[in-house]
Image 1 (cartoon, rainbow, N blue to C red):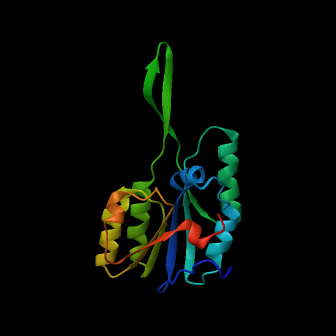
Image 2: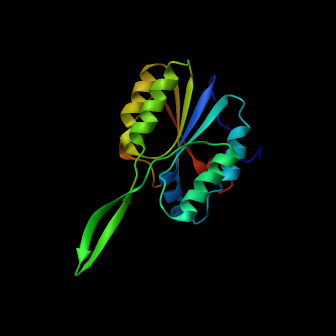
Length: 176
């Protein structure tokens, strides 16, 4: 592990949850791509991590399908579902659609299933404020909760959790 970067201190067995649509959005701010392989290699250096869960929508585009296959080959436990296209607006005769594929429920269901297995630590790669109630529940249960984010991409609801939640910026963990 590169010594100039911070190392997470993980309590007991842990699972990682990566909301890729959220993480992919960080690339614009970071002005660089986030490598799936580099991230997996980094996470594999922690013996406490037993599973790297990866959530991302399946699109009909061939690159999307290949991307998910690559994530699976690297070793991620991939959860996917079809992307929906929602009409966002119309200019003259041209309809504008927005790509939508949230995994909040899938992540929450997986967390509840994993609680039964006695996990002690939960690591989330997402700045989505919608997860704040889940984090608060885990903290109340005495679980370690680590949220990895990028500057400008952490929901106010998560930022306002002051006790029991460890927040780590991606740039402090990886060479991005």
